[in-house]
Amino acid sequence: MCWSETADLVAGAGVAAVGVACVTRAARGGSPRDLPLAALPLLLGAHQIIESRVWRGDGGAGPATLAWAVIALPLLPLWLPLAVLCAAPPRARRRLLIPLAAGIATAAALSYCLATRTVTAEIRGHTVGYVFGLPQPGLIVAGYLLATVGSLLLSGDRGLVLFGVLVAVGAAVCVLLWRREYISTWCAFAAVCSVVLYFWVRRRSRPVQARSGPGFRAA
Image (cartoon, rainbow, N blue to C red; front, side, top):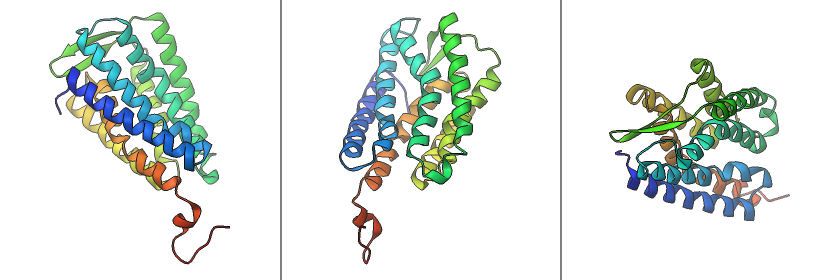
């Protein structure tokens, strides 16, 4: 895929539209506990649209760069484990406290960094690199991945585990191909993969009788 202002805008609009469909479906036929996770494609789609503004401004340290960084850095590692914890089956909730704790610590560290450092974006060919000094980058990246990918893999739900596997593969590919632009390319990959959440929401919002299959009746 060739990233550009147009690519980010088109992909972001498409993913955001899927997010609207997810939220609408979850609100009408699902559990309120599913809404934070159903809204994830909407958030990630908006994130890509914001990055299209970074492209238009030729990078730099403007408001679009800061908005992009706020979503990618402190918000996502906090939002995702909380959303998964809300939607997960009761048997999985205790173990999901581990990625949630990692997400809280990681979000706190990244929030402090954003408050005390300037984030700049650099256009590097067909990718964008975001630059700001991270203390203990290895530890922060590990906490970030535990909070995001780890919460999905530990969710106890097949659909969310599949999403987690896709995101994990994307993380590995982005590290191998775009090490310096890892966060931007991985967020784009995660945004596209989040389309699978529509099918997760659709399955969760089916009537109980339809989910139970023939020969079973809703209680």
